[in-house]
Length: 570
Image (cartoon, rainbow, N blue to C red; front, side, top):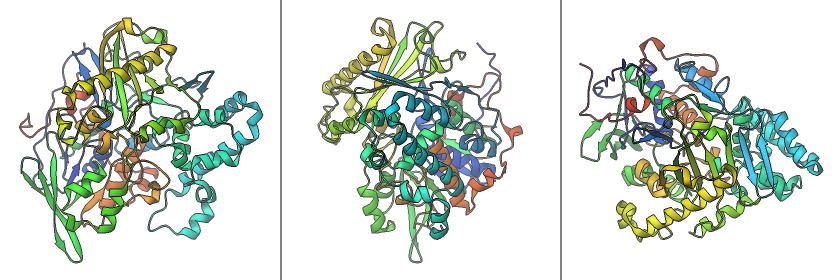
């Protein structure tokens, strides 16, 4: 045990906050951290007990620690994550451990295993080795993917101020292929079903059917890891949130938990409306003229705002958005050292080569009778950290897609949803899916059932309970060709003082999407191109103010129970 020398100090609520940020996921915390470092009095409101959103970890019996959503990450050195942290003065303060560079992802199909190596050249070479008769098509398709990403790094995602003539000249591959379905790219180059299955082996990272997946989305996911390799945050995803909370507090801001927003208050102003404050679920009013809303986009525009403040076109657009397919997760504590069976990789155990087929039962409101499983283990990726499991033990997380249809889960109507966990049909459905995932995981990890010391599951209803997300989706609105990139709402909304953030904004979901979107929303609020300033080397944070990482510091403790009636600075 470390000597407990760190003492948590929670600052008082800022008087008359300049900015209120709704939601404490990495999008909200990143936006708030940049604003606080730039001198804004920031208040972050989180309805849950712990800040961090899907980057959270949770503990059981003070022995087991599990990740909710951060399983691996790229770009931590010279990529986007590295630049965002550097802009806050956090570079070097958060440790990362690299996954196996010769196979950070391992795809296991019924008769084929494919390890994804670091680097585009190595990746394409391994694809050609696996499918030598398709070399020409594989090289052509992956060239398009590489060119899309190279061009996007130069010109970015177009917005209302983009010179389209110049954009077409500088990003011809993005224009030609970026918003087209990835299936069209594969059709263009006559790729087989087996090759497509391998190329789409990581598609669970965004949970969109291939027929609706933009080339730029899938290319971005693959490129994100191939550029520098894949990494895990040493100690778990909560470390990122903890450092951001510390920076916000050190710069006069405040993160407040148990603070659910019931309404965003507005008043008429000129030809539209402007923000005047927020009202919490208990009736408390917090005046402010500027709000960054990072939570669920449907709840924002359809529930939190006065209907008169939302232009009808936006109401219709948001109401028509499809949510991304939600996930089901099994958390296991095992009585053996997982590194004896599992290297520092993620296993994607696929039951078929056609990933489109995974979504057919979901669309019908049913469960897949033969689901795939994603296997992640913090114990395998971060074996030197002692906090994941008791000595000699390990943690493993098993994930798959699942229908959000309440009827399939035995939840008869919305009125039953608050009591879903007590319903026999719901518990039976969870147990059945958990058994399927464990059985499939045993095909690559060996016997697990005799070694399980802890087991629990999380469904789409669990996701909604903790994040208030529509349809239990952790990825926000589906990242599909008809609602991706420029087809999403801009950060600045027509309501004066209201800025959109979160995973349904233009930068999308995932760790890099959330944190990049946080930078973009902070910049939109300030009328500055913070992304470009960071790329040019600007540093806004002052590391000398920070306490995170001191002996005894605990990221989870730094992020929990930050409600108003808690310990404060004297």
